[in-house]
Amino acid sequence: MMKEVALAIACGIACTAANAGDTLVEQVRQWRSEHEPALVRQLSEFAAIPSVAEDATGLDAMAHRLQAELSQRGFQAQLLQGGPGVPALVYGEFNAPGAKRTVVFYAHYDGQPVNRAEWEADPFAPVLRGAPNPKAPPVDPGNLRPPFNPEWRLFGRAVSDDKSSITAFLAAFDALKALGRAPSVNIKVFWEGEEELGSPHLADLLRRNRSLLTADLWLIGDGPMHQSRRPTLYFGARGMIGVKATVYGPLRPLHSGHYGNWVPNPAYQAAELVMDLRAPDGSIRVPGFDRDVRPLTTAERESIAALPPVEPSLKREFGIAQGEGSDGLTASTMRPALNVVGLQAGGPGRAIPATAEVSLDFRLVPDQTPERVRERVEKRLQDLGWTVLQAEPDEATRSSKSKLVKLDWGPGYPGYRADMTQPASRAVLATAQRAAAGPVAVLPMMGGSVPIYLFTQILDVPVIGLPIANHDNNQHAANENARLQNLWDGIETYSAMLGELNW
Figure 1 (tube, rainbow, N blue to C red):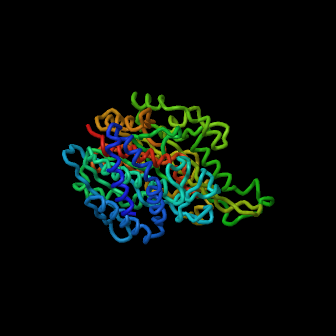
Figure 2 (tube, rainbow, N blue to C red):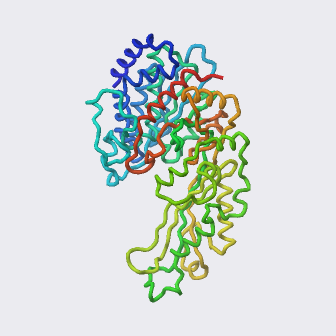
């Protein structure tokens, strides 16, 4: 693969003179169009490495592969170790002559776990297909000459989340070199290997490597683009905290005919618990829950208003009649959310179950904290007559208390929004607009959760999201895929950030 990249660079240098009058992005587009097979092959090779939490060997192989990719491009590359069992952080540094600013490019190389039975094909044997349908016939790019159909999809775990961003970054760097263009900024690369586990060691690694990571800006290559398919920037992300609520009923399942209407049913009580916390329109029924929410600024509200409407097409795509509330999609993701992500009770028999479980996740916005959310939720339940437990109830508790619920909270982290009007933000937006030659979807905050608050909290640096994945990529699910046009657009966007960003 490295030999192919070198040949691609040589070919790019040969055609530079003919394109000297084009813009940087146009020249990069020409370079990319001539080397699409090599680029698809590189992304396929990355996705074939099983870098998921349950495969330590795959994570280690991916880290070393990425270190080698950076080293052969002239980066000072190393693996930052976080201790036994912790996937290595891939770090690279490239100083550009005359550059006054330093930008760190972040992505994660780990993927979500897989259930192979749910996949149409082996998730670590990437398949190029001619349509978004995972049952569409495969395409063999080795037998075709570019240009490829931009609507083709490459299927495989982590192919879009985030190995597309990593591939786009490397391709953009190669394109600049082929075109004889020096980067406009000093470049640092920070590729993490346990983001899908919640980045439990990230804070410690950032603190231990604070001096190494000195920079003026972080660009985060994670998350999907706006549903309009416009190039997208996001200036923050919601935080989150999850909780598993276990509701207790009788000591053993009981016949629903003999004991229904008398023995409390934990499945019903679990539904009641959800309604105690969440209204049908999605609003949260916890007094004071919104007290710490930071209002949107004028610039943030204007950016939301400027987004093209996507709700009608998404309703058709998802097969739903309407949204929960009156807000549009993006406006709704600017608010805190309580999502029911799992329900489990009973079995095939007609019996009152002994327990019921509800898995909830709270999506937080600045300036909420996981600690205050937990405190207010537990008080709300206690005020409504629930007995909130931290451990399994004993027989005495079962015999003396009603509405028993054990809450198992995850660690959680807060949300973050950068100032959209600061110089770095304006420079990134202007560069993205030049690369797109048109409007850019500007999101004050991504609806999903990424612990990017750590970068600004520990390193005191602004953080901006630069996603390139297609919104319908089946992220975190079976048959994850990457649309080729998103990869092509991502290469152009990254080339602009590498070659033209300055402030």
